[in-house]
Image 1 (cartoon, one colour):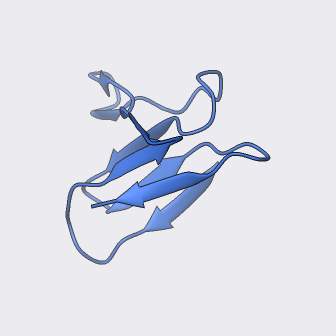
Image 2 (tube, helix red, strand yellow; image 1 turned 90 degrees about the horizontal axis):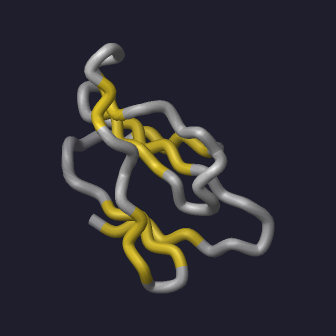
Image 3 (cartoon, helix red, strand yellow; image 1 turned 30 degrees about the vertical axis):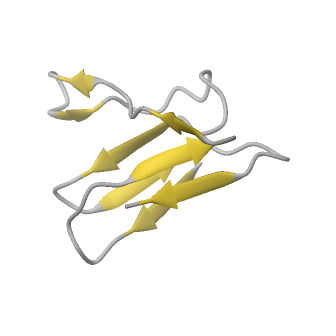
Length: 68
């Protein structure tokens, strides 16, 4: 799992093999997007807007693109 800090607020998309991978659903109990399970494959992601951190899961041989 990688965590990428961003200095500006914004919307980011994760692409794997040209397909956008949607972020994890909102977790009411946490008050943030749900934690990564690492079971949904390469590109599973969440964006923590308050602290501007994008987290995503990556596996060997998988190419992930981050797009604004």
